[in-house]
Length: 220
Image (cartoon, rainbow, N blue to C red; front, side, top):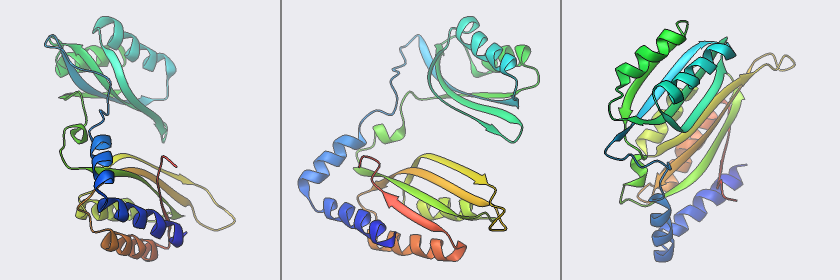
């Protein structure tokens, strides 16, 4: 496992000093993260909703979002957390539709849901940065315990690594006597990142919590 982590990070480090690799990764970094382009008459909003795992209420949320508010869902992430169904959506709506309008309209048809909304831009900041990056996948697994996520996010932040997507989960393992924690992150690593230091810090993180950490190229 450590050999694979070393190989992936080493391969990435070699790309840094390769001018062709720099041009290639710079192009990849500028690829849009979304498909929407808000026109002067449209704007982008993020809509978040969490409530009882009730398909009828969620259906009302989506129906009123797309029909009453004339929204188009561009991207979304949905999952069950505890007993709640939770979703986050990037939508384009007419410029006359404000986040307050969205919240008021959806709360009226799904009163048991907590709903929030805010304006956002159509594309990820990564799409507009001039700094080339490389996208890698980091998988973490081991005994569930406090502060794993906090330490992992702090580690990435200290290396100026951007989180593109992160999923965490826990599962029961009675034969081991504890729950298993699993994390999968897709991250964008800038070329200026000190890969030797990053590798060392990932190994310290791994040893501190007794975890298995694997770094891979999601395109392979």
